[in-house]
Length: 196
Image (cartoon, rainbow, N blue to C red):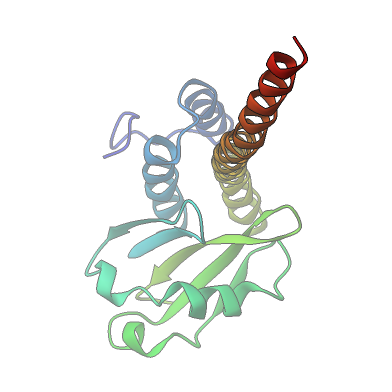
């Protein structure tokens, strides 16, 4: 469930303020993504939706009627689908096979991080998709919040990996230097004792 009051129709400004507050207070995908997904579904009157982050850290969130993890296309299929899309709303009736029996169309928005697709946000519809300029702008603003948190998590994961690599490098170098230095020190002591 969302962290906002259910069954209360809010104006777009209030909704965006609430989402930005949530992003600022809890900049973690596990807390932000489900709320944004539910709000986007309500705005667009979608039957279901999902949000997937590619690669590290891989994450998948889904919500709605008749959707489960097995129905969502594989990461590679989705990555290929969004690789050439601009960071905008894309609507299509050309659904992957596993979704065709349940839904009529989908809306895709690539999540961009460091100039490449880092994930995909999708809403699924069991009726015709109506996208007004107001809904499109509101949806893109919600997804911008999701993009900020995604970038933050990907940057933190990259930082953790670099820190781990650095620590491993220092450990190896210090070990590899310590062994020859011990031998040199021993040999120097031996020379010193023979000179006395």
